Length: 124
DNA sequence: CTGGTGACCATTA
DNA sequence: TTAATGGCCACCA
Image (cartoon, rainbow, N blue to C red; front, top):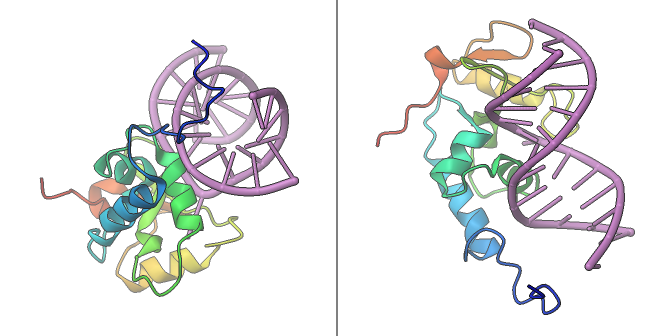
């Protein structure tokens, strides 16, 4: 199937446009209540992007300031029941932990959060 | 187009 | 538990 020679409109993620995609991601992130965290994969799934965790990460990276999106509440997954803040990240760095602690989130380790205590349970 | 990169994740050893 | 591997998908050179 020689379909790629045309480059129609890069519809990799179904038929959603990129801007709409990021808008959806930001909309989901805004729904995370203070004092809770959600994983990248969780946000991706709620935004209609199963398996698009990296896309969420990229959306957060390019997040414009002043949009009111609580980026600090989107964290990486460590194990089945824990999430982690990447302290080594040059963007969020240690700032993310301070912001989360200011919202009442407690760390069980230098970079670990227990999801059974602070994980966001979406109100289906 | 190709190839490399990464605010990720699941699986395997 | 950690480390390595493969997959994922948008972005960039």
